[in-house]
Figure 1 (cartoon, rainbow, N blue to C red):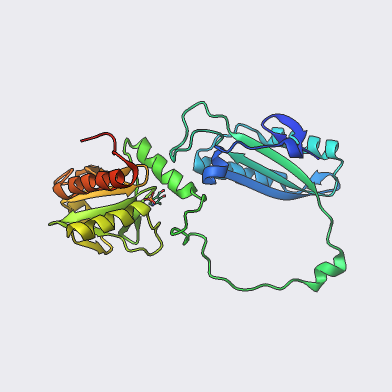
Figure 2 (cartoon, rainbow, N blue to C red):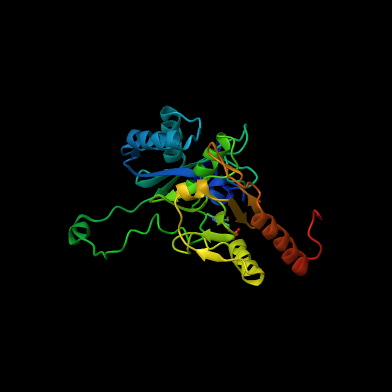
Length: 286
Ligand SMILES: Cc1ncc(COP(=O)(O)O)c(C=O)c1O
């Protein structure tokens, strides 16, 4: 079987996607599926139109028109001789070094189209029907899982970067949960607060910060706080394995009163010590 990948018609087994494709790393991609009957795709225009709407929302420019897609699909049906088939289209934001915000220009999108022979379901079998189960809708409640379905995180982070900020602080029901790729904390009169481990990512750095606080006698409360409380806090900081610990000194237009305050600085030092104890001298040295 031949598939279409980035301008070429190639054998299915030769169609390989780079490990840094943003579809693979972030689910930063869109797809469509439809059926091909008698060599003709059903509802292709509607599928492409839905994909275009998604692409607009995601600001993902894949640069292939409806006519071009139609031509690609027709060609795949012809060379594969698959009049009864399913059609799969995927476009991603392309290959770029892994980083949440959109990659720099020019990054070519990945465009993949595949047809797969499909055995029609016999009429009688269809009329026998299927069984089903009920299941809670968990689709946007998997924040505690380090899934690669990171598209909402990507979009939030990109929004921050477009606004000249480092991180997007996420808010759920008026409460600050975490960052697009970090955990978020406030400090008031020496007490740290951070969102409890309820449908947020249980950060490994967060667990080290908690341990450091226990050893140093710094009160560490797992308590939700509002956006207003955050903006009024003495200090705000974020953590992540690569970012480590950063003071957050401004949020939107509001300066955080103590900026890189005493507690955050203390944690940065203790964290560097924890790294040194486990991995050898932390760099840069103080
Ligand atoms: C949503 C989110 N929260 C928090 C974190 C920080 O987790 P960790 O300290 O394990 O790096 C990450 C890291 O990628 C993240 O994606």
